[in-house]
Amino acid sequence: MNRMMKLMAMVVVLAGAMALTGGTASADFDLAALEREYHDAMWYFVPTTGDWSGEVRDAVNTARVKPENVCQVVLPDLAHRGRYLALDLRGTWTPEEAGKAHDALTRSVENLTLLAESACDDPDAAMTSVEHELELLASARGTILRMLVRGVGDPVAPAQAQPITLR
Image (cartoon, rainbow, N blue to C red; front, side, top):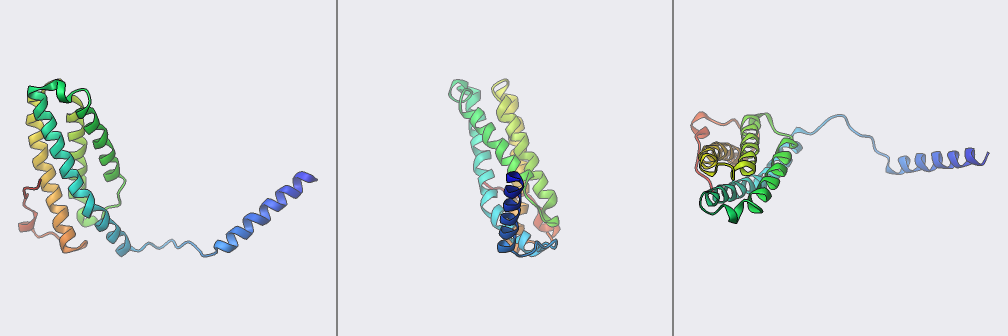
């Protein structure tokens, strides 16, 4: 009987808590709110990918001449950070207009992460791949930043979709 009373008390407490927090969850989602969240998040996140990719470039370049300076700590740390950047990008809801550029940015971050992990095996080959990947990353970043400046939801005109050079 004591067990039944405890169970009843728990049910009453839970019912009371649900009643107090009251409000129903809406199955509708606010597309404009999601687009604002994407804009706000990416406005600061896109430059972070540029800073990180520059650090990868510099570290891989250093590995070509002084691997002892970067192979034990710097490149593994950059790879670790890159994995989390890629996970953040993969987990971000993306407006349809930004889908291709967002996917390209994510792929570039993932590829640069792999290059950071393996750069000490063959730094010269890694540097060639890093330079190519940085071009792809800059193009994706430029497309996303132009979209953010114009506002989410505005289509990208072909003339605006050209790669731009970003740090």
